[in-house]
Length: 78
Image (cartoon, rainbow, N blue to C red):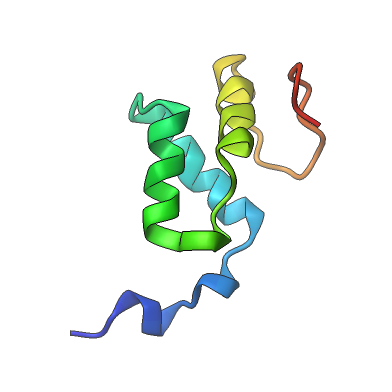
C-alpha cells in the first residue's frame, strides 16, 4: 500500500485546502479545538493554528461558507 504522504507532501497543501478541511470539520459539528487537534495530528506544523481554525469556525457559524481568499469579518480575526 502506498503511503498518502508519498503521494502528497504536506508542503503541497495551501490555505484553501485547509479551509475545505475546516469546513468539513465544522459540518461534522466538531469544535474548533477538536478540528485544530485533528489538523495538527494529520499535518503537524504545517497545519493552521487553533486561533485560525476558531476564526474560520466563527465565519462558518455566520453562514459564510465562501472559501475565496478575503479578510475574515469576525471580531478578533484579521
